[in-house]
Image (cartoon, rainbow, N blue to C red; front, side, top):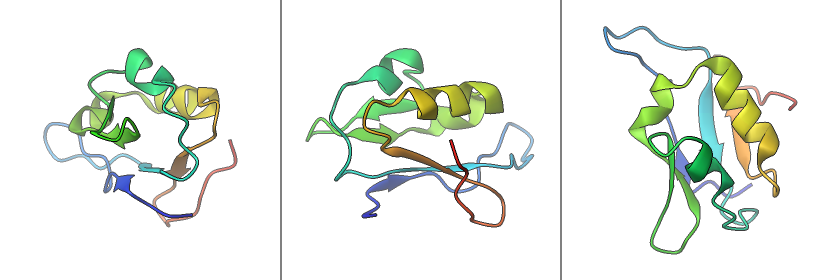
Length: 89
């Protein structure tokens, strides 16, 4: 997987670390924009119209993040736990 856009550990206001980080695989992304429509502060489209992770990803609940990743038609959104292991979606 080629990684173009990723978040580090997600942090909420006050510095609390959340258990998941997010990566977008640009080679898989089909530019559907579904993620950006579902959470425009967390995901956007870059100049090449590929999904990118935005700072607002820290504001998403874990459930919302996982639902958006599962809903990606290209399965280009990858979610990793605090050990760096990819979650099975």
